[in-house]
Image (tube, rainbow, N blue to C red; front, side, top):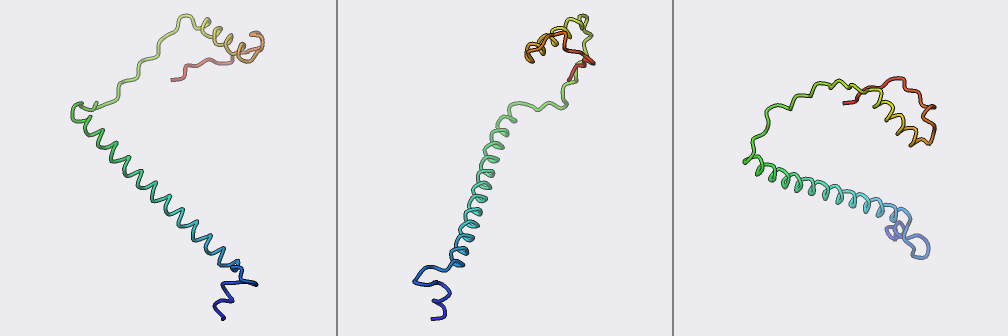
Length: 109
């Protein structure tokens, strides 16, 4: 009788502690399954990608060093480029081009 009093509340309903315990167990089992599936998918994808790169690597030799960066090119018509960029910004913002003030203009590599 003492064991059944813990599992069942009044009138045969399941006790709230058992419901909470079952919920927590189900959540952790679900999380463990998700983690297992992600690990399995990672393993399979790594095997597929490594296998593909090994097949490609047999026929093609890998470059030994990265290509050198090109030297900056001197621009003769820098004013025209700044004017074109300012016109594009003014059009995008919907303002007059005279409202745009250029402080600096640097090439981003």
